Amino acid sequence: MKRIFFDEHQHWEAFKKKYGDRIRPIVIKEVEKFRDCGDPKNGFKLYVCEGCHDVRHVPFRCKGRFCTTCSVGESEEWSRILTEDVLQVNHRHVIFTIDENLREIFLWHRELLKPLMDEAARIITEFFQKKAKVTPGIIAGLHTFGSRVNFNPHVHMLVTMGGITKKGEWKAYDFIPFAMLRKQWQTVVLKFIRKHLPNNEKKRIQPRLQKAFSNNGEGFYVYAPKQKGKVKEQLRYIGRYIRRPAIGINRIEEYDGQHVTFKYIDKIDGKEKHETVTVEEFIIRLIRHIPDEQFKTIRHYGMYSRRSKNLSRKLLATWQQGTRRWILKVKKTLRRQTWRERIISSGQKDPLVCPHCDNYYEYMGEVCLENGKLEIKVALTKEARSYLERVIDYRTGQQTTQKREEEKRNRPLTSEEDIRQLSLFDVS
Image 1: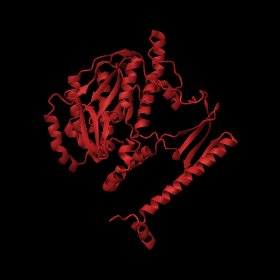
Image 2: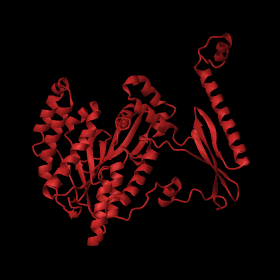
Image 3: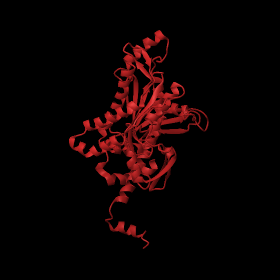
């Protein structure tokens, strides 16, 4: 992905120059965070082998929302924590979609994406409250991408099959009426689009709304497959799916400098297909899925909402003591795994074991980027500090040399000496 954006063709710089102010500021911020992700020039941790004294630099990651490396790691980590934090009961993976004629409306008016999630959760919550007299737990994730990396906003939800009653008891309920929800969802979406848009915009999009209504006699597509397997496996699979990036690196098959070829599964016939697009089109498709600043693509509702989560847990803890049904785990402190723990849990070799002598690497210090300069933040020994100072001097010298060469290449030819030097390479 970095090669496509930042190789010698400089597609990203050309894209910025061409589209300028039409690019959202958050897009530029996230793409350039991704460019510098894992680059030691932005800081690193120093590890030294206790046996052979081999030195290892571990660069910092950007943790950006566009970074392919960080987003995959974050997806796995969020999924792991989710399986420990939610109720150990059956959940359903519910998907709410919209008509394809409405997709561009959400692209033009990104402020409608939050109501899209809220309304989907409200429909499920009200159905459970009316039919089963319970409040379910819902975790909703917004996907703005389709299989072809096109703009296709839809909501994925993890829904408890049951909920908590007013008396604080757990009651199971495992029926979702697709036909009713489809028509209800269609009505809700069309209404809230009209509600949130100004009058002049309503007139412009009215033909799209009318077409979306007439083309979907059964309502917009709503799907909730029954999950198979153990509860923990269900949760981890759905959790990874809710948090997944717009396109996986394994789907990109070829890049020739000007075009990108990727594969996808066609939802109509279920077959694997391939598509080739220009790099510019590929960039346009990808950056549309970068959410606005502070926008939360994962939201919690019902029993899982921040407002009622603690109270629900207390009531269920009391209930399960009396019924001896353990759906709530003993409260424990959940912590994020370190990068080392993630690598080991994925089945790879411990990154802190020296490949030369099988001894362990020791943490000796770290360097961070502050105000454009590398600064030593931690140095556990005098030797470590001396070494880090030499590394900073070396990298600073490299950057200065590169900057001078770039300035020399870009400055206009003004002197006779410049023209004479150029003529040495003129073979015409």
